Length: 123
Image (cartoon, rainbow, N blue to C red; front, side, top):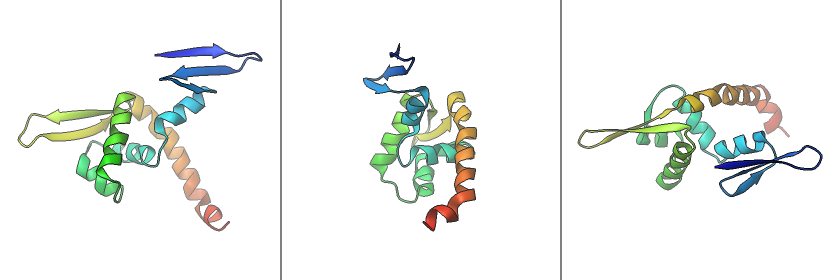
């Protein structure tokens, strides 16, 4: 559950899961904050992936960190986890509609990074 307050001067304060955010952008970045979440979302934008696929794509993220990142994205309804009734069970992760809505914004940041890659590294 969340609460929105308007502070003196018209500034917005959002409370969500026990934390305060100064604006909707701040809250949005909280959802994708961390080294791996945005990377996972970009890779899931190409279609569903299994856990080991995602671990290989991320070049060595630990199982614990990957599991935590996926769980947080699932709790925030950015991705969905589908468990197939097979032996052994097959598990796939995919973007929800909410997650697919994030992809264009992430692609813009990715394009910006490509355009300024050398400038950033040469400082």
